[in-house]
Length: 133
Ligand SMILES: [Zn+2]
Image (cartoon, rainbow, N blue to C red):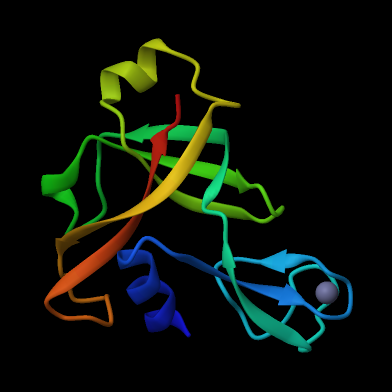
């Protein structure tokens, strides 16, 4: 499921799970519903749109990510409800000088060089959000 999530993301599709019991969405996909823990889930394609709830500009990266700083890690509330972590596709200065919370965004995928902790050895698919409008 993990790999399928990233492969779909690469094609511009955000995969999630819809709970057949309580109707809530879980994204990224998991075995059980985030809300009621039911395992009675079906795979769905999410809209990929949401709003920025909070974000931080990262200047000091964990090992292996040093070449990618500065980057902006954001928590986005998807239209369907779940909150998902991704990066914001804006310059650090813009993120520092403006309040981007509550801005509308949509998801896409960026390919980054692979690193040792990632299941695909040659590349890494990172969820990014671009500002809409
Ligand atoms: Zn549920």
